Picture (spheres, rainbow, N blue to C red):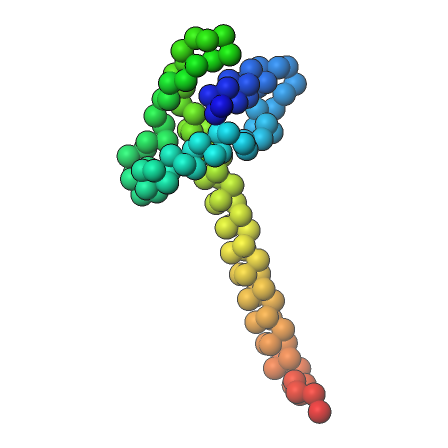
Length: 116
């Protein structure tokens, strides 16, 4: 199933006006690649670049295909994870800066910062 989904995505990317980066990578490809990662172990899977392996499967016409099913999936997953973690760290950093500015401002003005 992952192979058929891979070929469908590849065909959809060739349609004029279609952005291949906006075609979702969920379903059979995600399930297959996640299971392969668990089967090899995460460290070995990425250090040996096993995600670039070409897998053999049967296409819709009954012919044999050999394609790197997980390479695109993990390429996108890597960027999505980095972006989400980067945004999280940026928010924490911004909150820290704002907190320090507010504390310095209260100290500089000399206001009492306790409520009674």
